[in-house]
Image (cartoon, rainbow, N blue to C red; front, side, top):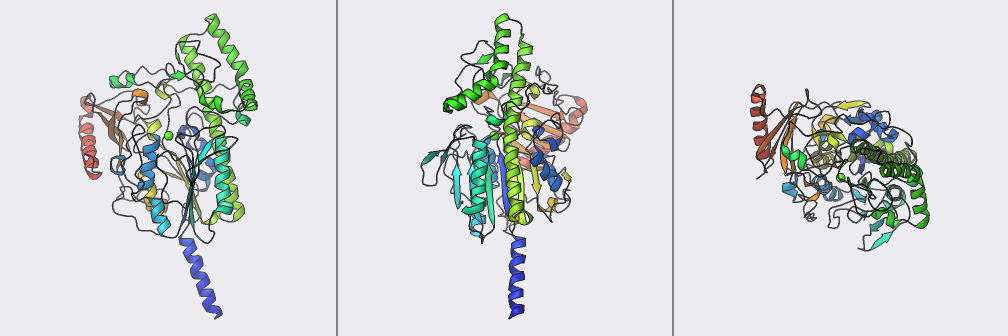
Length: 509
Ligand code: CA
């Protein structure tokens, strides 16, 4: 009898070991340049000690890309493991996620997992396949945010959104779940999305520091399609006076856009006072220079960049603190050993590169997604992977990790063979990724789609029927398209073949 009990006991342990929990920590618009572990110009500045810990204790993927560099579409791809044109959520302008389709949480739920999503959802329709959810309406708010409840009602919570999402995720881990089941928790932050509003405790972080500028802050868009110059996402001319740059009153300079700061309007009087006080002296200094005409447009762009990047990194700081709290709880509770922890963000972002904020373009800064994963006993600590991966792969990976067969209609691939192989791609791994942006009204970025392999990037702009080709080894900043250079003719032909093949493989019409 005793041996039978021991046998059953060991079987249960084996099953639990084979079915890890998954904590998926996701943020919005967190560029990998703003994670210290990725290196780059903020490597000694980005306040990410806890996210960095995942790289030390697990793996960091250096060639991780999205399929479509905007919020809703990226999330729909993660839910389904299918490209935007298949899952139907093409853009944020008209997108409504068809929640009746198969998704990874539904498959995991069927396999006995507890599933939860807390925070930013951004797929318009209500979440399906989750035992628990509590989500922000649309983009949500930084200060005193509302959350949609499972009964369909909305509740407002005082405080700072990033902290509230972290605390709600912790509450669910501690008391909300059925502890007899493995679980997947999606903890999805709104930060550091525009308008980059920091927590009060971080208002003064980086004060007095001079943040490094990207070399292409004053990009003139020469050497590439003229459509690059038509976008409306420059730091120089497309930032809002109050909303983005936290300046008081109405614009007093015509390089700024108007519009109210909706976040400020949500604050209570004490929060407003602290906010105004934090920015007061820098603001007054700028207003005086504008008044005196002693700041030119170039210097003003530099000022806007500093203001933008500091607020962005302040938002990142709170996200990282939340990661720390979750990791601490996993340690304290003993869950860490059998829990996969992932940090990712829905796409990258321009932190001044090409003179931009925002995303959409297939250039590296917004095409790249951070992807760090800790999985004790499976992922070797300190792994740096060069495998070409995409958000398309998350759903298959989650299913495979849980021992659930990956449905053949999912278009991504499980990362397990890469994870178990010290980050090295197996021989039959993809050699290129496919990307497609359908064009939205916001920011006037032209539709384009293309492919990237380990060295080159090719994309096509239907509006002008132009090809753009970049040699990422010789031109990592992507400042010159070489599509028309005769020496690149064989590369262009090869990349066009890859493009046609991937479009066919992914059933792009
Ligand atoms: Ca986003």
